Image 1 (cartoon, helix red, strand yellow):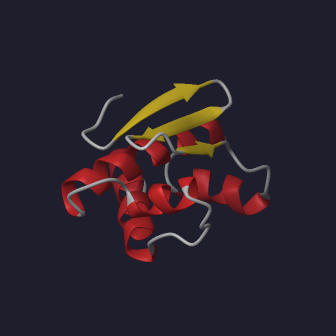
Image 2 (cartoon, helix red, strand yellow; image 1 turned 120 degrees about the horizontal axis):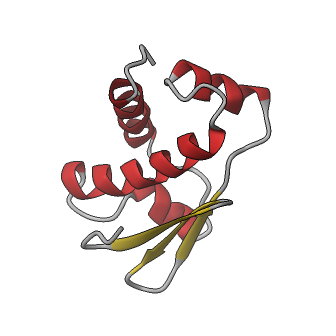
Length: 104
């Protein structure tokens, strides 16, 4: 998927987001009870891979539509900062729940 400020590739391990400056953010499903609970709560059942992939894709979409540029959260991750935008994370998770027909 190509966005104005990034390209995201979904693969069997998760997702890779590459920004225009060449920086990369990698994502894969977490093997934790909390992550599995998030998948259940957001309409994914036990499909943590789909949760991960769609989550990263929606970060890119929200970045473009809400913030007018690259996802602040993924941009920070690609540049070594693990603290992302709380607002962006809330928006992405709510979108996932709505799109999957879950309460989130």
